[in-house]
Image (cartoon, rainbow, N blue to C red; front, side):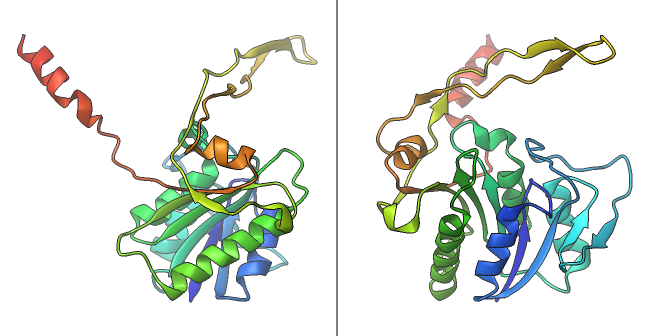
Length: 247
């Protein structure tokens, strides 16, 4: 089995080191990740300049681009053939609800999925990252399951793991994405040169976090596994917009 690993925190991040160490026991691992932190890069591709691919001392490859660039470059230009799987992470911080729209971690997995490869994004739900080994073990078990019995359809899984010791996990559940309140306003401040600058505000608190959502699962120390799709068509509004245009 051949697995391509990526993330959005950069090739030097502890999460991807834990992930590579765990999955190397199951498969041949290739790591292609951004050269720096690209959190929030979403599904952006770099089209205005060429990309460079370099190899670090630990054997990981890094690209001067986005997570999507990394997977696209690896799958379409670097590797000899399609990997059996793309795994993105381990992200430091949750990627639940609306976060998935902005997440570079999810974007890397999405690019693999778009290129025809079963893909998974995995995140550790905290700001401190105390139990990467828990998320790495979850990833290892899920990859092992997919290797033993692949799903009948192409799969893009978004996995969120509570930041607790393995023995404190209360199982794994399949969830839907919850929803957050709107983001906090931007923070306006002055730079050392007395120029007005803005920091993007914090994500909103959970709004739809009831039973069955990713928020609810993680809050209850359960691993959340959410199958994602790419089709953004709002099917319920097709007839509404069709009637509006005919007025």
